[in-house]
Image 1 (cartoon, one colour):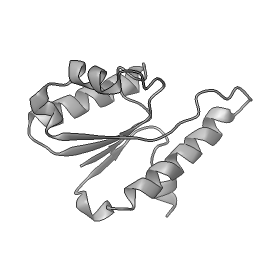
Image 2 (cartoon, helix red, strand yellow):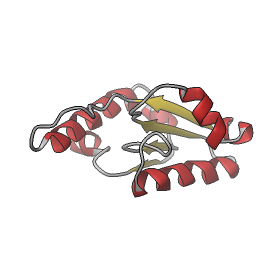
Image 3 (tube, one colour):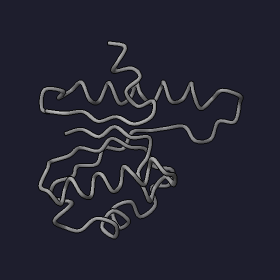
Length: 117
């Protein structure tokens, strides 16, 4: 399964991000292999943070793929434009092995470009 998300707790804070975290955690606990596509605001201690919020057993079933998202722009409408660009980056990465997924779960605008193809 692929989970396309605009961030995952604790790297990005918000309701959808917390839902993505719990979804990944409980799918892994039920031994469902999952690839999580997400963005990270701060990469400091990335692996340490993952190891704090996911158990070693859960980590066996989850692969994390970091996709760049520009959090720094401030011009009006940047979030919509960057969300589309982010969806393009996810699409490019996802297409390298799309046939390995039985199911794709997307949140927010993350599948925007995928749905256009």
